[in-house]
Structures are given as C-alpha cells and as structure tokens.
Length: 281
Length: 271
Image (cartoon, rainbow over all chains, first blue to last red):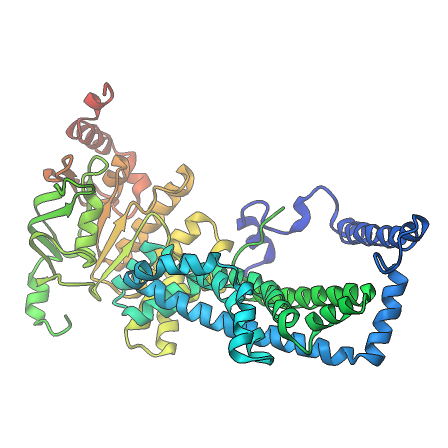
C-alpha cells in the first residue's frame, strides 16, 4: 500500500498517536515508574521483616516474610502444595468458563426478548444482590463434600456480572445501526451476528474481567466451607494448627491465581478490542 | 421487487408519495396522537436531486424512514420506482448525520456490509467495495479502522458503503451537519461530484439552506408540524456537480433569500 505512515498520522486526531502525550519521555516512564513500584514493595518488605520482631509481636500473629518463604518451601515438600494449587486453579477456570458461558448466553437471550427481561428483571436483581457465597453450605448439604458445591458457587458468582453487562450492552445498541442493517434487508440473526453481538463485545469483556477475579473468591469460599483440597482448605487447616504463615501463603497464592486470570482476560480483551483507540492518560 | 416489469420501472417516477400521513402515539396518559406529516405528496424523477428543507421537528426524518421502508405510513402510499414500499428495499441506500461505520470492521469491510445480503460471492463483494472506495478516493485507507479516519473521510466511507449496493435512490439525512465548516464544503463538493457521476436519484434532508441551493435540482419547503409541502422550488442553476461554483452565482443568493422568507425566519428572530 502506497500510503505513507506520515500521511496517516497527519489524519489522526491529536493525542491518539501514542503514549508520548504525558509529561515524562517514554523511556523514562518505562523505567522510573516500575522502578518506583518495586522500591515501594522492597521498603514494605523490609519494614515487615524487622518492625514486628522489634515491637515484640509474636510470629503466630504476624509472621515475617522470611518465615513465609520457609513455610512455602515446607508446604511444597510436605503438604503437596502443587496439588492444592492445581485443584483451586482448575476449579476457578472451569467455574469461570461455565459461569461466563451461561451468563453471556442468558444475557443475549434476555437482551433479544424485552418481554422476558421485564418479567424476570426483579428476580435477576434480587439474585444479583443476594450474597452468592452464602449459598455454599446449602450446596454442601445437597451435594456433599466434593467438587460440585465449589463449582456451583463459582459459576453463580461469575454468572451475574457477565449477565448484567451483556444485558446492558444489548439495551444500548445503537438503534440507527440496527436500522441500517434492517435497511440492508438483514434478518434478525444477521443483525445479531453482524451488529448486536460485536457491539456488545466491550461490555462482555468487561464482565469477563470482573468474573475472572470473582471466580477465585467463589472457589475459595467453597473450599473454606467444605473442602478437603485446595488453597481455601489450606487456610482452614492452617488456622486449626495456628500456622499463621500457612494462611498468609495460601492468601498470597490465591491472589496470584486471581491476578494471572485477570491478566489473561485483559490480554484477550486488548487483542479483541484492537479497533478501539487507547484512552490517552 | 426484482420481478417488476421493466416498462413500469422506467416509466414511473423514482419516488412518489401520495397523501402520506404519519401519526405517532403520544407519550403520557393523554394517548393523544401527534401527526408528524400530513397528506404529503411529491414525486422525485429519475436521476433528480431533491432537497427537503423545513423547521426542525417538521417530520423530515419521518419521510426518510417511510421511504427507506423502516416505517409505514398511517395513511397514503409511498411508491419507489412504481412499486409500493412495504418494507426495507434492496434499491434504497441511506446515510445519516452519524457515519454509522462499524468500529470493529476495516473501511473495506464496512463498505462490504450492505452487500452481504445480496447473494454475491466474496470476490464480487470485494471488487465492488474497492470500486466504490476508489470512486470516493479512499483506496489508501481501505485497511484502516474507522477511528483512524477523520470525520470527513468517515462520511465519504459511509457514502461509498451506500453506493456499493448500487441503489436506485439515495437518502441523505443531514450528512454534513456534524462536520466543521471547511470539511463540510470539501465534502459537499465531493458528494455532489460522486452523485453526478453515478446519476443516482437523491433525496437530501437538510436544514442548511445554502446546502440545498448548492446541491439540488429542486427544493421542497416544509411547514411546521404537521409537516406539509408549502413550496416547490426549481433551482434551475448550472454546476450541480460543483456546489462551490454554484454558490457564487448571483441567482443562488437570490434563491437563498427567497427560502429565508419562505421559512419565515425573520419572524422567528423575535420569538
């Protein structure tokens, strides 16, 4: 294609042509900001390591970072930590996938049927407000001490934000775009796949991003209440043994799983939504 | 629609509205109907460029929806090329103030959008889209996304999409009103030129009197709601394909002054 890059940039509105609009030069930002973040972490760790012992706080109240590392190594070799991490991750991913799928499908179905949406909206609102994790003991009574209650809680927790986001986007699809498609003699399913669905993708992705973090919460509650496996179970186990370091480590690992899942969804999101200009800070 | 006898297609006017009335259910408890347009009748000949001007809220956009088949008249009939309009038609293209480009598609795929229900092969679609992009001088931007284009380029892409379906009739609903003054002049020129080359019948809805004078063969002046045609003006000026040249003609200025009076703009300055 003969068009030069200059020509294109010239036609772009101001502020869309890169991150250079902020006050610091790009390379400096790329080095200084992460560096400052790391420095904050380092200072916090140093204080954590030396301040509690200096104040005489016992290690079963606040274990120091070095003790957490020792405990992590012990859990790896003696408590089959990898298996627990694997179990929690698997449950979170499956629960997220199922919850996301159901949430999206119901969101689109209700979005296409305003009548059903109006009939069901009070219940959707009620269920959305209800603390889903509180259902965990109920599911254990129904299904026993196995993977099913955890999975159901996770699916429920993930389901609603995605449903609500998709529904919201279906309500706000540009009427004129739909009319344009109608004017081109498109039928309902063509309008859905060519206009409504692609229009909703930003909202769907935002819902999935929220869902990814909630999935870890759902699994954790399930494991806390009735598990024999997983990081949530290790928290209750550690609590029973007054092993504070174990509780800290399990929380740290759960956070890590949540961050990785969030990051993966955010990565897919930026790939999928490449056609939306980056917000300039 | 494609089964119409050819004789009927060529003899009938491109567009004919006969005694068209459109009422809408009023909002609120009163259930009072309000009449957007009343007993509206006019025709547009093949290849003609007609503008509709009138005060805001006079039902101009209602006309567009009725012609596009997106809405049905309460009374009366709309005929396109001799056939009554019962729903969206393959022969009408429309364009609004908003470019309505799909942000997730490249410009090329946006232009192909209207062709996807026409039973064309992918290659044939691409060829037609590229042809229209070339006509609208957007070939270099075919692979860009809408956000990478300026407002004027986007409206040109929307015109390319509208013309790609090879419509008998193009409906333009204030396509220039969201643009800055300079872009507007350039784009009016570009549209006028493109429309003259294709020879397509055009109905332009606008509130810009100079635009109506500069671009059209005939101007229909509408009254306040319920909208009726109060005047039908033959422009009769040269340079339909070049609005800038036309606007500088003395007769064009006289015509604008006349339109100004016809719409009672003077009186409204006090209100």
